[in-house]
Image (cartoon, rainbow, N blue to C red; front, side):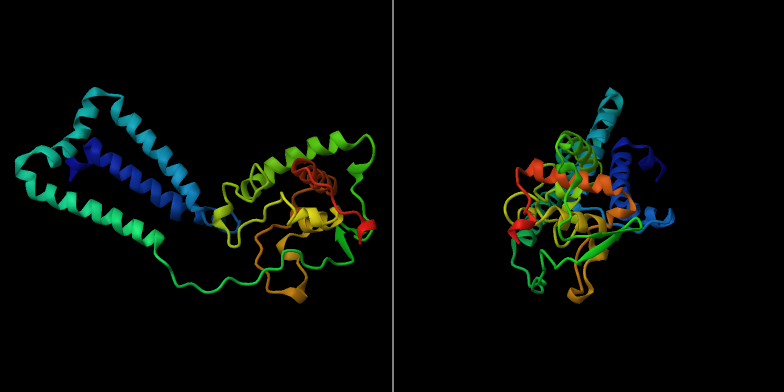
Amino acid sequence: MRDYLRHPFWQAIAVFVASYVLIKWGIPYIPPLLGFSSAMVPSSVIIQYMLTVGVGILVWVSDNEARWKRFKEPIRNLLVRPERRRARRVFLVLVPLLMAFVTYDAVRPKVTAPAGLRSVHPANPTSITVNGETLVLEGLENPFREEGREEEGYELGLEIYYQNCMPCHGDYLDGQGHYAHGYNPLPLPLRGGGTIAQLTESYVFWRIAKGGPGLPREGAPWNSAMPAWEAFLTPEEMWAVTFFLYQQAGISPRTWDEH
């Protein structure tokens, strides 16, 4: 057993497996230990990190000629040595069968429950309270629409978006961020005519400020992972990121004259 633990091949296998276990099951349990809620690690993120781990392992085993030679020994023994003929046959049969099963499982039709209905644009309240200030949404305008503040709003909004929103809503505002596939339903894309193009900026400000927890009770139960950003951002920062979204998407917000 000690010889196995000292062998670079089995050390590499152990590190790879341990890394997978830590990333998939260990990391979600770290936030509760720090007083935060747990979160699932998306499969796309797991794949990225495991590729990084695999490259690191290959660099480690190949940077030393003696270690690289020892690392290849078990592979060479299995594929070349005559006394391993039976094990080689089993291996060459099982690997294609495993790949075939994985491929079949990925493409086969699955019986799943029908998707739940989702109201994309729930009715907004008439007023909200943000940081102790009551705001009436009807007629409320973005302060960064004032002449001379457009560049300030865009630059601040860009910074806020890439610090907080991009992992879910994506670099292209298409709802395909790094963490997007860990959520059901997926984050909404913010480009095109289906979301913010239909809304006033005060509506978008409300959704950013209150998130999923602030959705109206009459439409519950809701299925939204959007956090209430008023706990992390100031009203000015939320207005700025609202301004940035429309500018970046090349969309003009609805105005109150259109209602």
